Image (tube, rainbow, N blue to C red; front, top):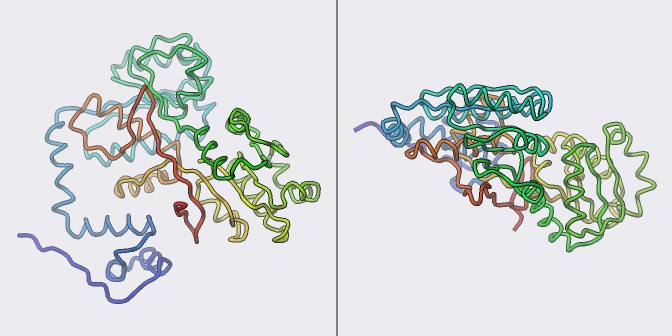
Length: 387
């Protein structure tokens, strides 16, 4: 019988202490001083992985069963991306998919088909290339407009899943083919949750100068939000925001601010709003998935983040998947595009390889992956669920 490694807890160690031990490579000290009631998700993942490395027999069991059942199959994955449109998200999605496939310890082919643009002809030509090369399904990293263009000109003969668009964005605009599946987060549902939290008080709204910012702004209006003041924030305006604060103080004082801005812009705005006196600051700061990002802690001070509430749809990850993705520069805990891409991949693979071990729990219903939204607030250098 193989030896079973046991590490005995010697004395208490705070989360900061544990992070330092792990970062400095003091693995056995980390294991010895880790407390079973630790709430830090990253520390939990680190502990699980080290524990399984020390005691490998149980952790290896399930992958071996899966490999034996699917040994003759090669996972074939086609990723359709218009790189000129989606930019860095192409790499985000690719790295996330690679992490998942590598963790399966199984032969696979992942090919990126770059349509460059999202016009109907470019998408049709690229989609047909995927069909001609015998891929069983397509993961299409498209915008809402891209999906409309794809459906308009291309017969979707393969199961096709879109990680970046939610079905509600299109179902009232057009007839959707039965082979088209959506894996995007429901941002309007997140917005509705935040409005309920604010008790539907009048809002100060800052929007990004992008499609996402415009979409979130529209969601607020569709949900009947009362808007006292609204502005579209460019990087130039964000960097000089302090100069505009004097004209907005009466809106911000004890108010509710809704950030539909990118993480960098949100950080810039928060840091300048945080310079107001306590009496002049907003009562509540709200944002959706776009700002559920650890960068917020590098861009702001603790006082800037007081009364900040953010919705998140990303569930707890398999620690091996999380760590493997991190090695490939993909943070699945906070990057919703990477998370949704891998969730979409797993839904597709389970159609063709029924014995596949699943890491994700989100169900698929009426051609849409359903996510569970949770409210979070910053605590120390992480997020905690709101009670």
